[in-house]
Each structure stands twice: as structure tokens, then as C-alpha cells.
Length: 264
Image 1 (cartoon, rainbow, N blue to C red):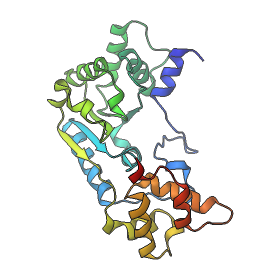
Image 2 (image 1 turned 180 degrees about the vertical axis):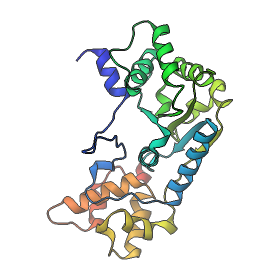
Image 3 (image 1 turned 90 degrees about the horizontal axis):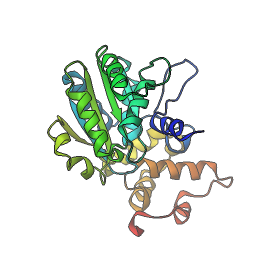
């Protein structure tokens, strides 16, 4: 596989289903039995995205690592096919040429992307005129300054009709906030928070049936000691507890799950 082809694969990662549609929301570790829980955090994110699409604005979505940022983003997009979302996962320091390649394929244009940037841009601009689209970029902190400038070019073009959502970890969002060109155009800075203590005893049993009959006090203990409202950590703990042959007690398993948050 040549390097150009590798970049295109890294930039766009669709998942096809038996029905021929594109589904992107996948639970950590492909956890069997895991369910999508419509928490207040998910509802708030959906509301912010709807407003961004309606205004054809630009939104930054931030969340701590493992809080469910990527899953929530794609779960909401899956529920709104009318938004005509274009989903991109850039590799570190992606170049504008990488974005052009990704957009060319995501927009379903025939043949290989033109080698001439001007020709490629004309085709992309034309495709972004109708229907209106939402450009969703995960791990957006990995975009280079030249890529952010290219997004500004597409967003400001009077011929295109797009909304943009840039998703990044809370510890990475500074890379986006330092771009004056970007911050002057962002219409919504939205934070997706981890589960709070009051949600644990209802959300976690709804997330996976393994916890349905678990003592609420034990759920709170596991969250306090290790998970800290983090969905990825809860998925990891659930996977370990349900796949070990001896069904080891989850409290015992905590000793084998490293690093613990307090040891970072």
C-alpha cells in the first residue's frame, strides 16, 4: 500500500452495515451487550449540533479522554441522516492535500482526486453547495495550521453550504483555541462532561445488563475507585468482568486494571 493511499484510509473510516448504510458509533472494545444510553450529556450535545447545523455555524466539541466524545458524536450523526454528515479522522499533521483526498471520496466523486489543487477545490466547492452538509472532524487538534486555513477557505466560500464540528479532547482543545482564525468563527464551544455520581446507579445498569442487578453501593465504589464517570473505563471493567472464565469479582479486578487515575 502506497503512502498516499494509507493517508486516505486513515482520514476516512466508514463502517458499512448489512443494510448498506454507514454506522460509526461503536462501543469501546466492541463490547457485546453494550447499549447507547441517552444521558443528559448526549441530549445536550445533540441540541448543540442541531443549532450548529441550523445556523450553518462552526462548533468545537471537547471532552476528557474516554468520556464518550467520539461515540456520542457519531451516535448523534447516525440519528440525523438529513444532516448529510461528512466524517473525517485526520492523521497527525494532515496536509490540505490529505483533506482534499478525503473530501473527494467522502462526497462520492467518481475517479481519483485530481492532482491539480485548483481543479480539486472547484469540484469540492460544487459538491458542498447542495445539499447542505455537516463536516465532522474528530481529533481535530491533529490538524495542521494549513488544514485549518483550508477549512476556513471552504467555510467562508459563499458558494458552499456547510456547518463544521471539530471534536477534540479537553486537554487538546488549547490547540484550537489558539487559532484566532478559528476562534473568531466558532459559534459554539460545547463541553461533554463525564458521568456525575448521581448518574452512576442508573446509567451503568442501562449501559450493560451485567450491572443490572449489581448493588448500587458497589457501582458507586467502583466508580470512585477507578472509573470516575468515564465510559471507556466502565467498558473496560465490564469487558474484563464478563469475559474472564472465572467471572472474577470486579473489586478484585481493579488491581489488574492499570494505570489507575490516581497513579497518572
